[in-house]
Image (tube, rainbow, N blue to C red):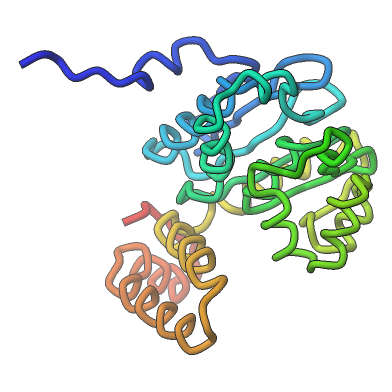
Length: 268
C-alpha cells in the first residue's frame, strides 16, 4: 500500500508572511503577522493560518493564543490580485479558513493596532477577544472594489453590532476608530498605542489561570448556543455543567477554594 500523502503535510514548511512563537512556560502561543509594512495576507497564508490554529489547538503546552502583528498596522487586508487569480472553488473556502480562531477550542486574543481592514478585520472578528488602540481603524472596504466581504465579516459584525451599524460599515466602506469600536462592544479594551503589548500580556496571564477544560467548555457552549432558543441554550448549559462536575479541575477548584490557596488546574 502506498504511503498516504496530503498537501497540508508540506504547507507549513515555509510560512508565508507570518511566524509562530510558543512560550510553553507561560502556556502561550503567538501568531505574528510579519509582512511589512501593511501585513497583507496572501491566499496561501490563509490556509497556513488555519493549519497553525489547528496545530496549536492540539498542543497541550498552549492554553491561550494571541494573534498580533509586527509594525504599526495589523493588516491592510488581503492580496487583491489573488482574488482574480483564484478559482471560484478556492474562494468559496476562504471563510472556513478565517473562521479557524472561532473553531479553535482555546481562547484567542486579537491585538489590533493601526489598519485592520478586510480579512485582517474578519479574522479578528473570529477571535474571542479584541484589544484595540487609539490608532486602530476597523474597516470592510470591499465596496470600493465592487465586492462584499467574503470571509464572514459582515455576518459576524451584524451579530455583534446590529444590522444598522453593519450597513454603515459595509455599504459605506466606513472606517471605525478604536475608541468607537470599544464603545460599540467590538473590542474588549482600548488602550494607548504603546500599551497594547502590556494589555495583551495582562489578559493572557488572567486566562491561563483558569481551568483549560472549563475554558474550552465555556467557549464551545457560548458559540454553539448563540443562535439557540433560550430553553435550548439553558439545556445545553446544564449538560456542559454536568460534565464539568466530574472533572479533576472542578474538584481541584473546590478544594483550593476551601483551603484558601491558588488552584492548580491541569485541564483534566
